Image (cartoon, rainbow, N blue to C red; front, side, top):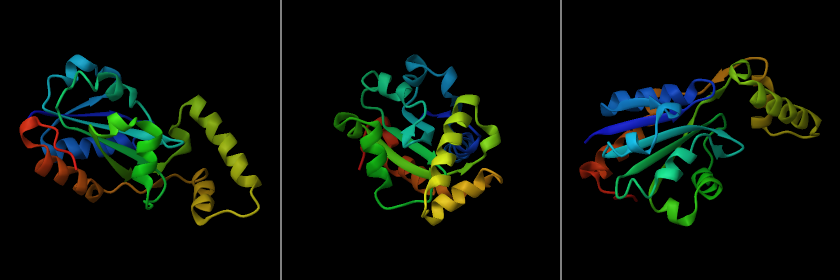
Length: 183
């Protein structure tokens, strides 16, 4: 099965996961800026990864714009965020990023990445400064929020190669033959 892993990465965590997935599956690897519908159509299985910003999957428009053209090909999407796994995260990501029809065509995964303020672009840095100010003004913060504030001073990396196991297993057991058998 000819497979491609496409990624949109801000600070390297999503790119790292994409490279690991491509290596495990013997897939081609391509950054989203170089991908288009014609390229995606040349593959039997399309895997897309994007970093999360306010629960939005960065670069997901590439998949959404080409969903109908990809027909019955299986499509796997992984979102990479700094927050720890929590119950309901997949549903929240689906609701914020996909219509009901799109959800039926995509299998979604969440992978924990990290946070490195210095690797962010100017606009994201500005947004994160306002986020930090908002967190700093809160009287009571969760452990996760305290950790996020600390990460502005010292980058954190929670990415682990073994985190891709569920996605890789799913690709190998549910996506053979190029038909969309999600579930």
